[in-house]
Image (tube, rainbow, N blue to C red; front, side, top):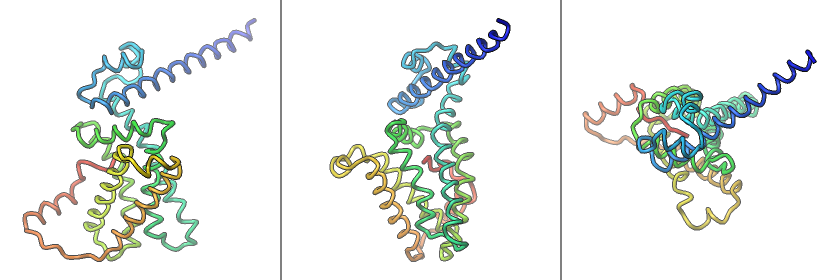
Length: 254
């Protein structure tokens, strides 16, 4: 009987851990949906408790504060996307036989994980796409900090790689062209489900593949387009230069 007691304790601990993990996921799923629908400020802890079917103690135990809950939602979505980006970037080296990867290959490594996340209906990708809009439209100190921490290292790696294969571009010019690329990507991901037509008729996997190819071709053409000198006033030039020296307050979320 003495030997059976440790085994029984292990089973109880395993069951308790499973219940805790289920509770945490239920809170995250409910909070993510409410934040996407109502916004961060308009959603209260009471709202989340009601939707998740938990008490305030569960929120305090798993997250502590509303800001920490927002951070947990952000990290569980964005960190896997960025790990996938780095894995795809690292995988380009063996495929090129020592030669620099193409612009298209680098852009695909940057874009594909975001599209995969957005089209993952089984894991709440559509909800997170709506939440992405909130990240941009609502000011939140915690989100700004997380954006900087998560995207600064990623964009540094991709910027260096793209500059090596795009020697005609200055760092400033590349910054602008990537800014336009992310703008197009986010707009399509956020509005695709609002559009009737081809998007509704295709298989989700095929649709995501087509979107990835289209955005990559579009962005590659933009990066390869000739650099044209655009006359601007000295004040605008100064502001642009300052924005490049500082970390932009809003990094791409996806």
